[in-house]
Each structure stands twice: as structure tokens, then as C-alpha cells.
Image (cartoon, rainbow, N blue to C red; front, side, top):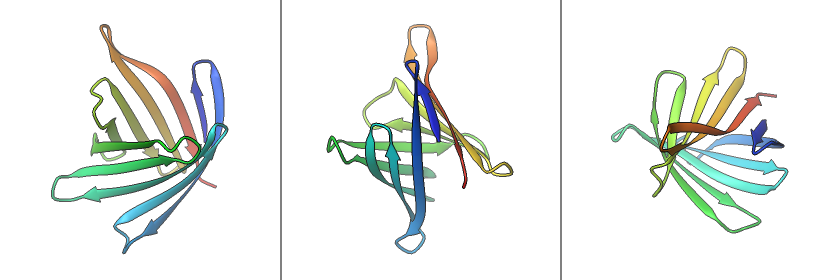
Length: 120
């Protein structure tokens, strides 16, 4: 993947694998700024996704809750922050996923990071 934010471009590599009986996806990632691990699941009863991201170099943990916007998109919000949203949009026929991070200000939502990932 490649992310663009604050005039910078960051290269990223991700590997997802199904674990724990197929109920979770484990993500291992490496970016220009460090390594991280994540765990993603979906709870049918609440119809929500839960994604926890663990940053190796800083020890930070980020927890996101997500809902389906449509058949191809999931919108995540970080726990405790109402002014940030992160949307994943899948184009499975092209093997690509677009990420969009936005912040909410007085004038509405503004894109602060755009990324595009391609399956290898």
C-alpha cells in the first residue's frame, strides 16, 4: 500500500491471515514509520467490526469500531474520538482497497490521509 498525508508518501506492507477458527483476521504490517500488529473481527449480533492495532515501536494500542456502509465499504471510528473516521472501500475485482482517514471540523469532514493497497 501507499499512503499520502501531510504532503508525505509512506510505503506499507500488510499480511492478513485467518486465525482462531476463522473468526478473526490477524494483520501484520510494516510501514516506513514502524511495525504493527492488528486483530480484526466481526460480531454478527451487533453487526459491528472491531479492530485493535498494536504499534511495536511506541507500544500504543488503537481500538476501532466499524460498521458496513454498503457492500464494499466499512467505516471505522477510533474509540473515544467522534471527530475521526477511517473508511475502507474494497474493489475485489481489481484486488485493491482504498483507505480514507477524515477529521471533522467546523466546516464538516476533511480528508487527511488517502491510501491504496493492491493484493500481491
